[in-house]
Every structure is written in structure tokens, then in C-alpha cells.
Image 1: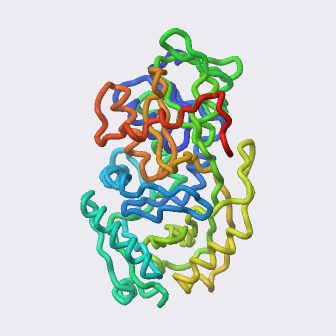
Image 2: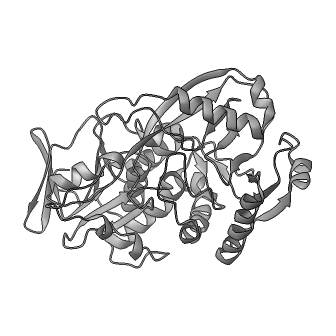
Length: 386
């Protein structure tokens, strides 16, 4: 297909979800990926399904996430994830065993209770427990836990399985995938866009820019300013042990997430920054972040102190300057859509469905006008602060 209906740039989880939802509706879709599919942020993330609201700042993050704004989208995401394996026709190691969000101080407990009110309004079931009540349900928690909120809908999926599953399902509906096909130019030709990779090209009336940390670069090729703020975060994984932790555990005031995956490893993250973001290669991990993250996790779950660290890795995160997701058509550039930003893994099914609806001229299931790319378009004559 050199003249598809839609060109999707990026074969991470957002591009894959978009390709599936569009192809399922009968659109002829081509997906272009600069390297191996799922090799960047989507394949290096923790794979958490955040249905209850989480901490508003990862370590080193200056601007807080507007957690209350995202909750209706998280509720919608929960509905999508509940039937995702049936829709994609394969196992993606989806586990919905629930999650605890812990607090150590009175101020953090107040945050738990405030977000509980938001969650109730959004239709997300949560319960705030005292520290003793939480330890009765999860004896692994330390005495430092003052309170915890419980959400039965939290969980995770295997990030190494879900994106390939989306892509395989999209291809069954006729989509074409072109890995190791870096975009070298995007030209507007009348009412269409011509996307080039070396001497190859594809032309379509619709482009979906789901290139993650490279969203700004791809948009600039088309003369469209979309300012992102990509960063690199890192993950840590222990050796395999018999099943011991059956729930996702997070911290309301600090960047921490811990879970045991199906293979038996304990995966420890929370958005701690890597030492360096390398857009051309592999980002460098930070020993300081490793020390901080593991010490924090061991403070809440003391049994972790007896486990050997197996490895750690860094991956890019397509953050925005306001730390909120970006989704929608770029104002003044009909047919050019952007999708990325915060909560991308959890919200991937929602964003794929939203893009398919918007491209079809329909209203999305939940309003997203305030999350559009127009807020990230800058005057190119104005210097951008790092």
C-alpha cells in the first residue's frame, strides 16, 4: 500500500492500538517504525494498569499531573482492558489482582482521602484503609505504612506481549507494518501527506504521529511545532522467587511501584530518572536512582531487602511540558493527529479508540479537547527553555 487511508508513525503501544482500532473499522493502515516494534518506551515500561489515581510527581518532575482530570479516562481504560485479550485473541498476561496505594504521613493520608473522593465521583471503586487494616490484607507491608487505598481494578499486562498482540490483530485486519523504516521527511501535498523513508514513500490524507519521544521531530518534518519534553526513566528487576506479592503496591507521595510478574521476578519502578536520555541510542541508567528507588521500596516492603537485583534498564518517556497526555488533530493542519504523553500504557486502548472516532468524524467516548496538541504548538521564533 503506497496510498493507504492512514499512515501511523510509531509501532509502540499507542501506534499499535491506533492501527488496530483503525484497521478494525476498515481503514487501510500502514505503520512505519524507525527500528524494531516495541523496542523503545513501550517495551521498557513497567506495564502497570493505573486505574486508581497515582502520585502526581515522579522523582525530579517539576509540574504535577492533574490526577483528577485523568480519572474518567482511567475508568474508560479499565473497561477496555477488561476485554482486551478477547478482542485481540491472545494472552497478554493481563492480571487484575488489585493494588494498594500507601501513605506514610498524615499529609499523604489526606491525599489518599482526597483522591478517594475524586475516584468515587469518577465511578472507580476504592477504599481507604488504616495501616493495620492494610497490613491485615497484605502482611508484607511495613509498620511505616500509616494508611493505604485499595482498588480492585489495578493490575498489569506484559509490555512485551501487548504491543505485538495489537500489531498482529491490526495485520489480521489488513494493516501493513514496516519495521526498521525511519521517517526521513513528511511533506504536505494538497490535502494529503507524503511520508518518506529514504527512497520509499507513502501518501495518505491522515497521519497519526505516535512516535513517542520523537513526536516533536516527526511533526517538525511537516512544519508543525509540537513541543514535547521527553525524559528517560529506569526500571529494576530482582531474581525470580516463588509467588509472594499478588498485588500492585505504589506510594502516594513518592515514585514507587512494585509488583511480582508471572515469571516470578519483582519489578520495581516509579518513574525514577535515568542518568541520561539518548535519543539516538540506549539511555544510561543512574546508580543514584537505583539506590533511592530500592531503598524506598524496601522501606515499604521489607522482604525486598533479601532479594538480589538481577538487572536494571532505562527507557524513554514521551512526557509533555504540562505532564498531561496529548491526543487529537493539530489545529490548522487537517489530517495530522498526535498521540502520546503521560499514562500512555494504561490509556493506550482509550487513545486507539479515540483516534479512530476522531478520524471518522465522531465524538470520542470521553471529551479530550483540553488534551489536544494545540496547547503544545509554539511560535518557532520564540526560544524554548530546556
